[in-house]
Image 1 (spheres, rainbow, N blue to C red):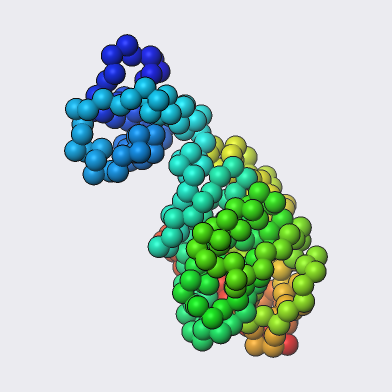
Image 2 (tube, rainbow, N blue to C red):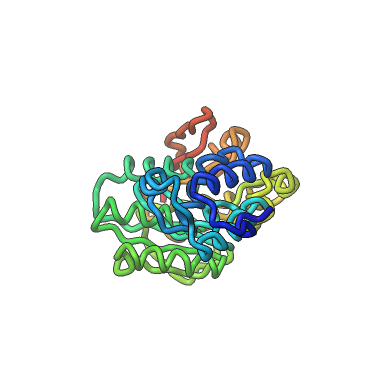
Length: 290
Protein backbone atom coordinates (compact mmCIF):
# COMPACT_ATOMS: atom_id res chain seq x y z
CA UNK A 1 0.00 0.00 0.00
CA UNK A 2 1.41 3.45 -0.82
CA UNK A 3 2.58 5.32 2.25
CA UNK A 4 0.32 8.30 1.47
CA UNK A 5 -2.79 6.14 1.43
CA UNK A 6 -3.08 5.97 5.25
CA UNK A 7 -5.98 8.01 6.63
CA UNK A 8 -4.19 9.03 9.84
CA UNK A 9 -0.76 10.55 9.44
CA UNK A 10 1.69 7.82 10.52
CA UNK A 11 4.64 8.66 12.74
CA UNK A 12 8.12 8.80 11.26
CA UNK A 13 8.94 5.54 12.99
CA UNK A 14 6.29 3.70 10.97
CA UNK A 15 7.23 5.44 7.73
CA UNK A 16 10.86 4.57 8.29
CA UNK A 17 10.09 0.91 8.91
CA UNK A 18 7.80 0.69 5.87
CA UNK A 19 10.34 2.42 3.62
CA UNK A 20 13.10 0.04 4.70
CA UNK A 21 10.89 -2.97 4.05
CA UNK A 22 9.88 -1.76 0.59
CA UNK A 23 13.44 -1.07 -0.50
CA UNK A 24 14.60 -4.40 0.88
CA UNK A 25 11.84 -6.20 -1.02
CA UNK A 26 12.96 -4.34 -4.17
CA UNK A 27 16.44 -5.81 -3.79
CA UNK A 28 18.18 -2.63 -2.62
CA UNK A 29 21.28 -3.80 -0.75
CA UNK A 30 21.64 -0.69 1.42
CA UNK A 31 17.90 -0.48 2.13
CA UNK A 32 18.09 0.88 5.69
CA UNK A 33 20.49 3.71 4.87
CA UNK A 34 18.72 4.64 1.65
CA UNK A 35 15.35 4.71 3.40
CA UNK A 36 16.75 7.26 5.85
CA UNK A 37 18.24 9.32 3.03
CA UNK A 38 14.91 9.43 1.22
CA UNK A 39 13.03 10.30 4.40
CA UNK A 40 15.41 13.16 5.09
CA UNK A 41 15.19 14.36 1.50
CA UNK A 42 11.39 14.22 1.37
CA UNK A 43 10.86 15.79 4.79
CA UNK A 44 13.71 18.31 4.87
CA UNK A 45 14.86 16.87 8.20
CA UNK A 46 18.49 16.25 9.06
CA UNK A 47 19.60 12.74 10.00
CA UNK A 48 19.76 13.80 13.64
CA UNK A 49 16.26 15.30 13.52
CA UNK A 50 14.92 12.15 11.89
CA UNK A 51 16.14 10.09 14.84
CA UNK A 52 15.00 12.64 17.42
CA UNK A 53 11.40 12.88 16.16
CA UNK A 54 10.49 9.25 15.56
CA UNK A 55 7.01 9.68 17.04
CA UNK A 56 6.16 12.82 15.06
CA UNK A 57 3.95 12.62 11.95
CA UNK A 58 5.01 13.68 8.47
CA UNK A 59 2.81 16.21 6.70
CA UNK A 60 0.83 15.13 3.66
CA UNK A 61 3.02 16.92 1.12
CA UNK A 62 6.16 15.27 2.49
CA UNK A 63 4.43 11.88 2.48
CA UNK A 64 3.60 12.33 -1.19
CA UNK A 65 7.21 13.27 -1.98
CA UNK A 66 8.42 10.22 -0.08
CA UNK A 67 6.00 7.94 -1.91
CA UNK A 68 7.17 9.23 -5.29
CA UNK A 69 10.83 8.87 -4.39
CA UNK A 70 10.37 5.37 -3.01
CA UNK A 71 8.57 4.37 -6.20
CA UNK A 72 11.44 5.70 -8.31
CA UNK A 73 13.99 3.80 -6.24
CA UNK A 74 11.95 0.59 -6.29
CA UNK A 75 12.03 0.83 -10.10
CA UNK A 76 15.81 0.94 -10.02
CA UNK A 77 16.56 4.63 -10.51
CA UNK A 78 19.90 5.52 -8.89
CA UNK A 79 19.55 7.00 -5.43
CA UNK A 80 21.87 9.84 -6.51
CA UNK A 81 19.44 10.92 -9.23
CA UNK A 82 16.58 10.98 -6.73
CA UNK A 83 18.55 12.95 -4.15
CA UNK A 84 20.03 15.15 -6.89
CA UNK A 85 23.62 14.83 -5.73
CA UNK A 86 26.49 12.42 -5.16
CA UNK A 87 29.54 12.58 -2.87
CA UNK A 88 33.02 12.75 -4.36
CA UNK A 89 36.05 13.25 -2.15
CA UNK A 90 34.99 16.13 0.12
CA UNK A 91 32.41 17.46 -2.33
CA UNK A 92 28.69 16.99 -2.82
CA UNK A 93 28.12 17.34 -6.58
CA UNK A 94 24.93 17.76 -8.54
CA UNK A 95 24.00 14.76 -10.66
CA UNK A 96 20.85 13.73 -12.48
CA UNK A 97 19.53 11.76 -15.44
CA UNK A 98 22.02 11.86 -18.30
CA UNK A 99 25.03 12.24 -15.99
CA UNK A 100 27.35 9.42 -14.92
CA UNK A 101 27.31 9.02 -11.13
CA UNK A 102 30.80 9.65 -9.67
CA UNK A 103 32.39 6.55 -8.16
CA UNK A 104 34.86 6.20 -5.27
CA UNK A 105 37.30 4.47 -7.63
CA UNK A 106 37.61 7.67 -9.65
CA UNK A 107 38.85 9.47 -6.55
CA UNK A 108 42.02 7.40 -7.00
CA UNK A 109 42.56 9.08 -10.36
CA UNK A 110 42.48 12.50 -8.69
CA UNK A 111 44.89 11.31 -6.00
CA UNK A 112 47.28 10.07 -8.67
CA UNK A 113 47.12 13.34 -10.60
CA UNK A 114 47.80 15.43 -7.52
CA UNK A 115 50.70 13.20 -6.47
CA UNK A 116 52.38 13.47 -9.88
CA UNK A 117 51.78 17.22 -10.28
CA UNK A 118 52.61 18.78 -6.92
CA UNK A 119 53.35 22.16 -8.55
CA UNK A 120 50.26 24.33 -8.39
CA UNK A 121 50.47 26.21 -11.69
CA UNK A 122 49.62 23.62 -14.34
CA UNK A 123 47.10 23.24 -17.17
CA UNK A 124 45.09 20.06 -17.68
CA UNK A 125 42.52 18.52 -19.97
CA UNK A 126 39.73 16.37 -18.51
CA UNK A 127 38.11 14.50 -21.40
CA UNK A 128 34.71 12.98 -20.63
CA UNK A 129 34.28 15.19 -17.59
CA UNK A 130 30.71 14.08 -16.79
CA UNK A 131 29.66 15.87 -13.59
CA UNK A 132 33.03 17.63 -13.52
CA UNK A 133 34.08 15.66 -10.44
CA UNK A 134 37.72 15.12 -11.47
CA UNK A 135 38.32 18.65 -12.70
CA UNK A 136 36.56 20.30 -9.76
CA UNK A 137 38.63 18.31 -7.28
CA UNK A 138 41.90 19.19 -9.00
CA UNK A 139 41.01 22.89 -9.32
CA UNK A 140 40.01 23.14 -5.66
CA UNK A 141 43.21 21.55 -4.41
CA UNK A 142 45.47 23.40 -6.84
CA UNK A 143 44.32 27.06 -6.73
CA UNK A 144 46.55 28.17 -9.63
CA UNK A 145 45.68 25.33 -12.00
CA UNK A 146 43.53 25.80 -15.12
CA UNK A 147 41.39 23.10 -16.67
CA UNK A 148 39.77 22.31 -20.02
CA UNK A 149 36.67 20.15 -19.48
CA UNK A 150 35.49 18.22 -22.55
CA UNK A 151 32.27 16.21 -22.70
CA UNK A 152 30.07 14.80 -25.48
CA UNK A 153 26.83 14.65 -23.50
CA UNK A 154 25.17 18.11 -23.38
CA UNK A 155 23.28 17.22 -20.19
CA UNK A 156 26.50 16.26 -18.45
CA UNK A 157 28.31 19.34 -19.73
CA UNK A 158 25.57 21.58 -18.32
CA UNK A 159 25.76 19.73 -15.02
CA UNK A 160 29.54 20.18 -14.87
CA UNK A 161 29.10 23.91 -15.56
CA UNK A 162 26.64 24.25 -12.67
CA UNK A 163 28.94 22.35 -10.32
CA UNK A 164 31.90 24.54 -11.20
CA UNK A 165 29.79 27.70 -10.89
CA UNK A 166 28.58 26.70 -7.43
CA UNK A 167 32.17 26.02 -6.35
CA UNK A 168 33.45 29.32 -7.78
CA UNK A 169 35.72 27.61 -10.32
CA UNK A 170 34.42 28.87 -13.68
CA UNK A 171 37.16 31.51 -13.88
CA UNK A 172 39.77 28.75 -14.13
CA UNK A 173 37.96 26.42 -16.50
CA UNK A 174 36.84 26.21 -20.11
CA UNK A 175 34.06 23.74 -20.92
CA UNK A 176 33.99 22.26 -24.43
CA UNK A 177 31.54 20.03 -26.26
CA UNK A 178 33.53 17.13 -27.75
CA UNK A 179 32.19 13.98 -29.40
CA UNK A 180 35.56 12.24 -29.65
CA UNK A 181 39.03 13.00 -28.24
CA UNK A 182 40.20 13.98 -31.72
CA UNK A 183 37.63 16.69 -32.49
CA UNK A 184 38.57 19.33 -29.93
CA UNK A 185 38.75 22.83 -31.44
CA UNK A 186 41.22 23.96 -28.79
CA UNK A 187 44.95 23.51 -29.13
CA UNK A 188 46.86 23.74 -25.87
CA UNK A 189 50.09 22.69 -24.25
CA UNK A 190 48.80 20.87 -21.22
CA UNK A 191 50.78 19.36 -18.38
CA UNK A 192 48.16 16.68 -17.89
CA UNK A 193 45.43 14.85 -19.80
CA UNK A 194 43.14 12.91 -17.48
CA UNK A 195 40.11 10.81 -18.34
CA UNK A 196 37.63 8.33 -16.96
CA UNK A 197 36.34 7.24 -20.38
CA UNK A 198 33.64 4.69 -21.29
CA UNK A 199 35.31 1.28 -20.90
CA UNK A 200 32.57 -1.36 -20.66
CA UNK A 201 32.60 -3.77 -23.65
CA UNK A 202 29.36 -3.39 -25.60
CA UNK A 203 28.21 -6.95 -24.95
CA UNK A 204 28.78 -6.53 -21.21
CA UNK A 205 26.59 -3.45 -20.81
CA UNK A 206 23.46 -5.60 -20.63
CA UNK A 207 24.88 -7.46 -17.63
CA UNK A 208 25.44 -4.37 -15.50
CA UNK A 209 23.37 -3.67 -12.40
CA UNK A 210 19.89 -2.42 -13.20
CA UNK A 211 20.37 1.09 -11.83
CA UNK A 212 23.46 1.51 -14.03
CA UNK A 213 22.26 -0.33 -17.16
CA UNK A 214 18.78 1.19 -17.36
CA UNK A 215 19.38 4.72 -16.09
CA UNK A 216 22.94 5.97 -16.46
CA UNK A 217 23.92 7.31 -19.90
CA UNK A 218 25.08 4.52 -22.20
CA UNK A 219 27.52 6.84 -23.95
CA UNK A 220 29.39 7.13 -20.65
CA UNK A 221 29.56 3.34 -20.27
CA UNK A 222 29.92 1.68 -23.68
CA UNK A 223 33.54 1.56 -24.77
CA UNK A 224 33.02 -0.44 -27.96
CA UNK A 225 33.50 -4.11 -28.74
CA UNK A 226 36.47 -4.58 -26.40
CA UNK A 227 35.76 -1.54 -24.21
CA UNK A 228 38.91 0.19 -25.43
CA UNK A 229 37.75 2.52 -28.21
CA UNK A 230 38.24 5.66 -26.13
CA UNK A 231 41.61 4.52 -24.80
CA UNK A 232 42.92 4.21 -28.35
CA UNK A 233 41.41 7.57 -29.29
CA UNK A 234 42.91 9.25 -26.25
CA UNK A 235 46.40 7.94 -26.99
CA UNK A 236 46.01 9.23 -30.54
CA UNK A 237 44.75 12.68 -29.56
CA UNK A 238 46.68 13.37 -26.37
CA UNK A 239 49.84 14.46 -28.24
CA UNK A 240 47.77 17.32 -29.72
CA UNK A 241 47.30 18.73 -26.22
CA UNK A 242 50.31 17.60 -24.17
CA UNK A 243 53.61 19.39 -23.90
CA UNK A 244 56.74 17.17 -23.94
CA UNK A 245 56.99 15.46 -20.58
CA UNK A 246 53.27 15.89 -19.94
CA UNK A 247 51.20 13.18 -18.29
CA UNK A 248 48.35 11.00 -19.52
CA UNK A 249 46.25 9.49 -16.70
CA UNK A 250 43.41 7.06 -17.35
CA UNK A 251 40.93 5.10 -15.29
CA UNK A 252 40.85 1.46 -16.43
CA UNK A 253 38.02 -1.05 -16.54
CA UNK A 254 39.89 -4.20 -15.52
CA UNK A 255 43.29 -5.87 -15.30
CA UNK A 256 43.08 -7.18 -18.88
CA UNK A 257 42.60 -3.70 -20.31
CA UNK A 258 45.37 -2.34 -18.09
CA UNK A 259 47.84 -4.95 -19.30
CA UNK A 260 47.02 -4.33 -22.95
CA UNK A 261 47.45 -0.57 -22.59
CA UNK A 262 50.80 -0.51 -20.77
CA UNK A 263 52.94 -0.29 -23.89
CA UNK A 264 50.23 0.82 -26.28
CA UNK A 265 52.09 3.76 -27.82
CA UNK A 266 55.74 4.40 -28.57
CA UNK A 267 55.09 8.10 -27.88
CA UNK A 268 54.49 7.43 -24.18
CA UNK A 269 56.50 5.89 -21.37
CA UNK A 270 54.48 3.94 -18.84
CA UNK A 271 55.00 5.24 -15.29
CA UNK A 272 52.83 3.31 -12.90
CA UNK A 273 49.42 1.97 -12.01
CA UNK A 274 47.27 2.26 -8.89
CA UNK A 275 45.23 -0.62 -7.50
CA UNK A 276 41.65 -0.08 -6.36
CA UNK A 277 39.95 -1.51 -3.28
CA UNK A 278 39.62 -4.91 -5.02
CA UNK A 279 43.32 -4.99 -6.02
CA UNK A 280 42.45 -4.27 -9.67
CA UNK A 281 44.72 -1.87 -11.63
CA UNK A 282 42.27 1.05 -11.71
CA UNK A 283 44.41 4.04 -12.70
CA UNK A 284 47.43 4.24 -14.96
CA UNK A 285 49.92 6.98 -15.80
CA UNK A 286 52.14 7.60 -18.83
CA UNK A 287 54.59 10.37 -19.70
CA UNK A 288 54.55 11.87 -23.20
CA UNK A 289 57.95 11.77 -24.87
CA UNK A 290 57.23 14.67 -27.21
